Image (cartoon, rainbow, N blue to C red):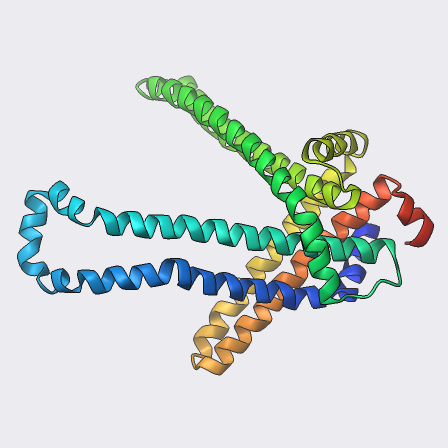
Length: 307
């Protein structure tokens, strides 16, 4: 079933290749937002500091002598840049979540209806429908992640204290125990993060397909993962595949960019890399959507779409 979902994921992504360029457009909007929200305040701050920077040689001894007083002089600039960065993060998160709702909505419609054709109007319609639900769901999952992170940090602090106590000893057993505790903490943390990430991905898909609320989507995914443990295999295959392909892509792109330093070729290579990466992401979402529809025997799937 995992291989079938991967194959159908590629087919579904190929039918909706337009989403690649939509995602690239979202990336461009994010870069423009970065310049507007963060770049402009930084430029203003640099211009404001220009006079003091010109006198840096005489000011450095003063800064070293009383750094708090000098830092308080530019506290407003620091707060401005900090607030600008926070506003950019909010703007970027909303844009990404909105486009994700549209992308998943289009992929879901294409998966349950073989005759469905992509259009920008349908993309924006699905984005508007799915965005509020996804916002509530992601907020809930981030709260869960924050709680897990706090518990992990607390546990790590306790383990670090134990390791510090054993580090003063020289016996082989105590050194082995401290090393084992450190490795176990790292591995356990990585496993928890992967499980949470898988829960988030499937919950997002459940929210879009079932059109249910945050808690209901999470409950459905818990039931799905309990009854269909092979979902973990699909997730790991996609996760590992994307990482490996990205590593290969970076290994190829770096020497090519160094070889072709002039702008047109570099821009073209960057565009090709962006197309490949976005295609992989859309394929991964497509495979997960196909799997969810199959695993839950979605009624529309059994009525109108055969794999």
